[in-house]
Image (cartoon, rainbow, N blue to C red):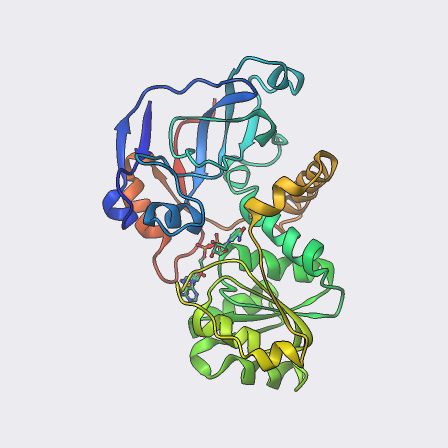
Length: 334
Ligand SMILES: NC(=O)c1ccc[n+]([C@@H]2O[C@H](COP(=O)([O-])OP(=O)(O)OC[C@H]3O[C@@H](n4cnc5c(N)ncnc54)[C@H](OP(=O)(O)O)[C@@H]3O)[C@@H](O)[C@H]2O)c1
């Protein structure tokens, strides 16, 4: 089969190549998925750069999620009991390896996807939507009328938070790095949108929500932006850090944590998800499908590149001001 392979960590546009590699076959409790589409997510590119929390042995193939059709079951009962053969599934590949014509994943991570969800949305079904519901509803529990402050608000995930705010009734205060993105996010439903280039974030935030600051914030950027979100918290405020887009650490004034009881936590879906029970994982999956149908957790889709153009796709995914998630086509839908 053909697969995107990298043999050294580095700039994805330089180290990713398409190679012929042996067809994989599933072991016990696994299934093989004939891949259709997979997104180029920031986490995939961090792996290729060697900057992700968990790194594969090299050579390796990236790709944590995507959609495809189960075409082979490994030995054992699980795949048969779940009746996966021939099903179109969301392929959650926590080891990475979906940027290939075939991927082998644990049977329990192949989730049949309802027929009315198109391939493009099925390909982006899990990583961002599940993270949004985990952070906003389950961990922070942001309630109606409350402000949620977020950075990188124009990201695919940030846009889902804005739409979930409209749906659930909480208000979003959105930080972007480019003024040009402000109007677009207001149109999408952002209650307030500010640009980090327009002055200290905490001062801008307090002008909008009042001198007390916000109770909830989520940040995938770090550096000055993450620091600005931390300084925007009110007493007992909570900041969830969930990404490293700037590659820079945030600064924390301990006085704000000690006397103000502010809390900074990290969120990683790869850690949160395995702690869910089977029924709650099934419920989460149903909730995501329903919110995709309601255009709350659907992804804006950008260009779809063939596997041969994986280096260009990676470059496109990191272009400033890009519109829509970049997808890689790995095979046709049967
Ligand atoms: N912890 C977890 O489990 C988890 C799960 C899912 C996602 N994530 C993280 O969530 C983040 C968003 O993911 P996504 O798929 O939605 O990304 P995406 O669609 O590729 O969007 C990336 C966004 O980040 C902005 N950005 C990039 N570098 C930046 C910087 N240095 N400063 C400020 N903004 C910057 C871009 O702004 P422009 O529009 O100006 O170019 C763009 O809007 C990523 O960091 C990803 O790793 C984490």
